[in-house]
Length: 314
Image (cartoon, rainbow, N blue to C red; front, side, top):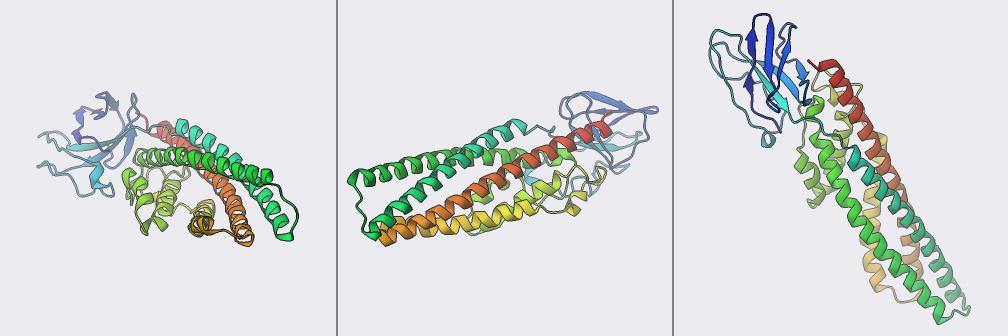
């Protein structure tokens, strides 16, 4: 969220700029360049100097270009007889590394559960094939199979819910950090970065676009002096593959759930078991790709934040 737009004080050859975040008065002897971004030496907030009118308190139209209006507020202060400069401070970068570790931990657990689930599906396939061939199968074997499937199903569901919540918390933090990494012209807000996952129909492609935006805007190799340079950053094939497999898994899931409830004959149970097996394998790949995406974006944001601090600090 943008903080108030305040006036920089001019004292001879020294520019005193009070950070709107923490109130620290930063000084610089460098020539004032409207549009240049700095970091507060204390809290790390990104401060952008912007040229305003010499005779009025109106901010140039480029002041908050590209920043979502629902996450900003502004105020202009004029000072007659002094260079009229305004500054915009973005909420300081907050590392998402802690959230990344938790998401990675639960995703790794989900991979393990999926592997066990796939193995249980394989055992069920073998058991159903024996029944179809006419081999003798005891009631104890059938009950043991049903207990395995029910137990792993509940564990998978519970772990998935926790993992999804943590992942969405991570998405929110990662997107909220984008303005503090010097990016403007962002298409989404942190709130909608999460919200699009729950909108019918649009959730088929919007979450992919959100994740791609986070990936590109976190690129540490882009020009830090160009707030829109992230748009030219290359897209990630990992994200494309991840979302494609997610849609495939969702499609199979929509077919599988009613089929499980309706399956009664051995042949129907066998078909459902194979679909469950395939879905389990796909979910393993999705979880691994998600780990790669989360960890890579976290690394990219940490690197870009350090580069900004090194190059822009007063």
